Image (cartoon, rainbow, N blue to C red; front, side, top):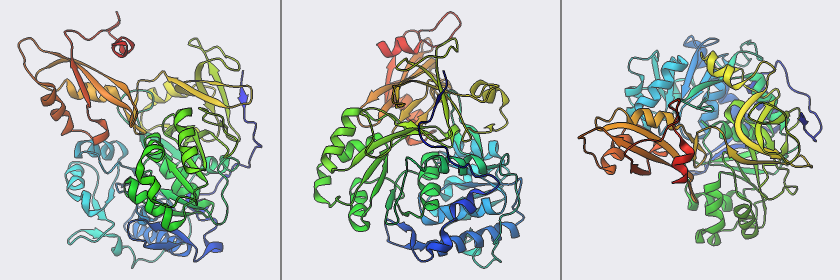
Length: 515
């Protein structure tokens, strides 16, 4: 059975770049604030945003950057993030967005895999950037803030602006390569075209409906597809003022809500938990809030209701993934159901299937499959992983277990895939297991996610030591800590005489979870 959206179809944009689409209201809005830097209050109007993008595009073009080239963007949420993202897109190139908390080794992997030739960062991450670019195809390092001896954003502002989109095949050429672990394994480049991004913003118009005076808080990182599309591009395309924060700090977030009269607060479940329970919330005026929208991981009905009761606004959630640009389901404010991730967005089909691929009906649990214009083109240089995720009929197999009720509301109930979700970030067990096996004392390893009220899940490792070898849990955790981003670190560790495996050698993770 194919489930279709109950929402009206929308006209899917075609042939328009994501930059032209994002700036579609810029001339009309002119001096209205587009992006406000939360920590400083520094404001960029829609007119200034458009001019800055065109200057950076011109500077990139003058350096020979254009179609077929990739720019790596490794920075926190600052107003200039959008300028470099769209400057590269306007010049006809591709952007790969990098988590700035990555270790140099993790950054190197993404630089090599994406073939980036320019790396843009901020001074805080300059040392990691310099180490990471060694031996890669990166030929120029750029900082957003000025650093002596390094090309900075200000060197672009004297360029001749590029005022027209460099012609590209919007349906097929990748405009952005965010990295995702997909259903398994090490992170892979997700190929998203201009049409993928513009389609998904338009598909959300009936669920994410904004007014002319809306102000949104952008804590969620722009390097992540949720922050990039739902916040940065989606909000700007709809004329919403964005207040950026480089990282989450509850007190600073509440100050920004109070100061800028924030109406939309985009969050992940751990942030909703803080809003529901932390005493700091009572010290600030939050009456301006109309909607708290949670994504990236399931939000429990109980926690959503608790936050809603405390703050007096709608607390809703959506469902998506990087490979879906990212939204396939979202809740309409005021029309949610407890525990539901909302309804299917416009122009989207979904199926619920059993382990044999047979279709299931209403209220039956099975794997969620999605088809629509937001589905990625595939994984970069990885036909095998692409074929395992998107079938010949265009259905993307999400790896999530779900059911739809008679009203078309979806409930995410379990995960087939082995990814751990720590505060909304993907932690692939296979990556940590491979790293653990490089420790001289470790003979075998397995990693699973353990439920946690604050983080959603935390990584727990099970270790078998080599005969005669000795190592403490703390030593192994420190070994991992030095090589991965903070959210991937092993939070719990248990030694076992043997890792349980099937006859085919597959780790029996359910048996480990049952422990």
